[in-house]
Image 1: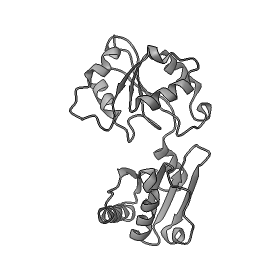
Image 2: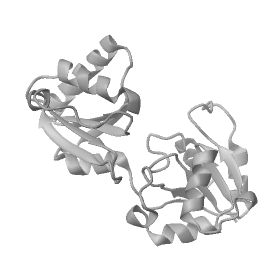
Image 3: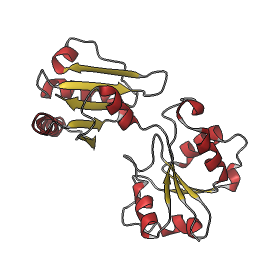
Image 4: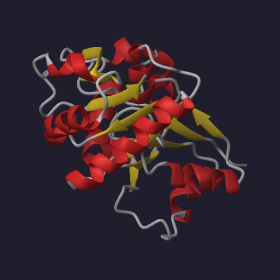
Length: 236
């Protein structure tokens, strides 16, 4: 009989475990011996914090990252579940399969009729939307925008048009060290009355969340976003 595939959220940064994750998660984690992880080192750091005295050497890890070819056969990662042993998926931050390659394993689990069990935990995309004041009934997550300035500007214009024509909140992210360049691009490309929410360091001591129009942001000192994970949201 198949066991279950548990989707295990992790903390965003070094937030205390009990501040954002239920104790139930710890009980589930402690019972699992097989993990599909985005990064083995960060997964181990999380497990050591989550379960006191956990025996890392007794665990098996399978790496499934952005570098894994979507055509790669990952059936072997779910063999333990098919043999009756629960398996967990751990992302580097937040919830598995949300802006995360873990979705490949979840898709395969459904094909093999392995029960999929999502556990409760923090997700920066949803937390930023909740705190933005923007439309939470019609929104889109766009991942990373183009790196090249001209292509990024063109994409920002596309997203802004959706905001105004479709009443749809547009959400996207950037590599932390390029956050300041992203803000500069947004302020240059978007109309003055478009609203921008910047949410960074969510649930951590560095948390910063603010919504202003583009015109207002231009008159405001840049927030402390350098090297801190951030979410950017556009709305009208």
